Length: 66
Image (cartoon, rainbow, N blue to C red):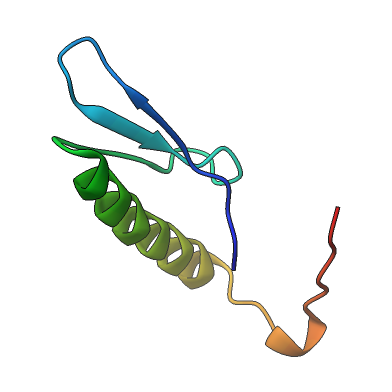
C-alpha cells in the first residue's frame, strides 16, 4: 500500500507527519527518520483499528490508480 505522507518541521524543531487519506493519523519525531518510523507505526495501528471496527472481505477489494 502506498500512502502520501506530509512531513513538516514545527516551530520547536520536531518533525510532524500526517497522512491525509487516513483522518487522525498523525505522528512526530525529533528527527526526520524518527518521524518516518513513527508514522509507519501509526499507519499500521490506524489500519488495525479500522479493520477491527468493520472487517472487510479481501476478495472484494478494488485497486484504482489515479
